[in-house]
Structures are given as structure tokens and as C-alpha cells.
Length: 387
Picture 1: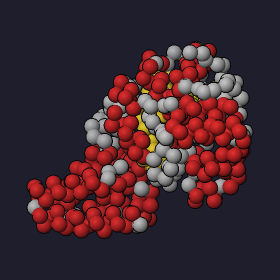
Picture 2: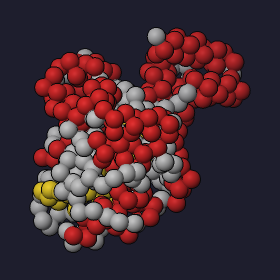
Picture 3: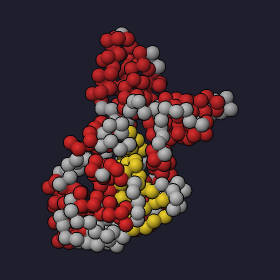
């Protein structure tokens, strides 16, 4: 397996822990610009252009993910970094998964943003490779970037969108096409249970390329993996919501959440993030807008203890906590809270079938009237969610 010497950039304190950032298909190292200022407060940030991208060498394809991973390892060797945190997005996340599986001694903690262990169909990727080789990357740039950002964000930031379209269009055609072929042959699902590196997976609610189901599949197979799904973001979530993603990433790389009680300010900050991830920004913003002098202590209480402590513990996944919460709320006839948490359960990846099964279980152990009432609420909420 031959590695190439990739173009790279190093920022942040020399004595800080190393963090390797691995970019996506069609992007260069500048795609990380929105998060780097915050990350360099904590880490020595190493970012680079993958082969065939940016200022790195372009080799004839097809590429393999293992070859791209060899480039990353060669860069760490050149920089004298024995072990680093690894954060990859999309194609970069695939490289990160390979490193965690086959070079775990080099990976401290892994973060996988908007990526997948298998991103078919393979034929579509090979067709895109053929199109780019025939017509250049400009032929796909507009469509690709259309999946990177939500329409609302794109409408508000036309100059940023134009820069990203130019970035994709400026990617060497062979590098882009050969990387498409790497994705076409990528199927890492059976390897995931062998990953022992602490892993965090981020998905975006509005991502059409790698929707949250991909992250939940990986989290179900990687021992101890955690998932966060954020709202109001698409495939390039860390550009659309850099402050939120940076905070979540830093939490993971610092080893949070754990079962050790956190200091009060940290608990409140963590609780705010988890509350927004589960319930959505719109809900939390409404609650905060209606906070009064009377209710402020209670809002602080639930942020710190419900969300900063219990919902942040690693023993259960977010989806498992949603299952428990729905059953308890239904049994106790807490209708308003039940409706809110059905919406949250959908955000956490639960399907209608899973919600149905929970409420059937409620009927068995808490009584038919409780389940009947809960089904009526679920019908109303899920119909509204689908519309």
C-alpha cells in the first residue's frame, strides 16, 4: 500500500493533544475554517488535503479507503505524532473508521461526522466518477453543494455557498473520480464491532447524503459509541453550525459525558447542548423565551440535572432513553410531556414501529386506557411530523 505526501497545515499549541481533521469528497482543508479557531484553543490541529484534492498529489484511480488511511498515517509519521484524536467528515469519516479499526494504537478518540459504513449504491458512485472524468468536477459542483447545506442557510449565505461550489469545481477530476470509486467499494459494516477506540458519531437532521440512520447503524455496532443528531443542518453540519459541533466535538475528545458529576457550569453547558439535540432548538428557544422570574430556577434545574446529568450518562443511548421515557409518560398520563417526547423520540431515530411497540407494552402493564390515550397522542404527533 503506497502512501503519498499530502499538503497539510498545523495550528495550535505545540504541547497540546494532536487532533487530525480529515476532509470530505470534493473539499480541501479550508472547509474546516469555521471550527479551527475554537479547536486550536484545546488542540494542536493537523488538517490536510486528501490525495487528489486541494494541493495534494493526484494519482490515477481508483483509490481505496485503506490507501487514503495510509496517507494519514504517513502524515502523522512525518510530523512525529505517535497518537492523535481523529475527526473525519463524510469520506474523511470513512478514513477515520479504517484507522480506528486497523491502526488503533495511533488513534486516541474518534469522531465521525455525517458519514457511513456503507454508502451505496456502488453503481451511482461509479457513474459519478465517469461523469467527472468526462466533463470535469464543475458538472457536479452545484448539485453536490446543494446537499451540503439546508436551503434556508444557503439563501442566507450566498457568498459562502459560491465559495464551496468553486471548491468542488476546482477539485482535480481524477482525484474526485478516484475517490468516488473508493466510496463505491466501501463496506465496513462487518468491521465495526472490532473498533475499540472511543467513538462519537454526529448526524444532521436534514442531511440527504448520510441521514441519521447511518449514524445509528454504526453506533449499534461500535462498542460504546455515542450519537448526536443536530437540527437545522445538512451534510456539512460543522460549517452550518460550527459553534455547536465544535462544543460537542470538544466534549467527546475531553472524555465527556461520563458518570462523574460535573462542575455546575459544565453541567449546565452540557445540559443545554443535550437538551437542544434531543428536543430541538425551536422547542428550547420557546421555553427560554417564556422563562420568567418565577420559572427561571426550574428551567435551570431541568437543564442541569435532567439534561446535564441523566440524559448525558453513557449507560443508555439517546434512543433507549426515549423508549423508557415514552413508556413512563404514557403510563402516568402526562399528555403534554408525552407529545413532546414522541417528537424527541423521532429526532433520536425511533421509528413509528418502535413507538407502537412501546405503547403496546404500556397497554399490557399499565392498562388499556393509558395506552389508548397514548396512541391518540402519538397518532396526532406523528401525523403532524409526517406532514
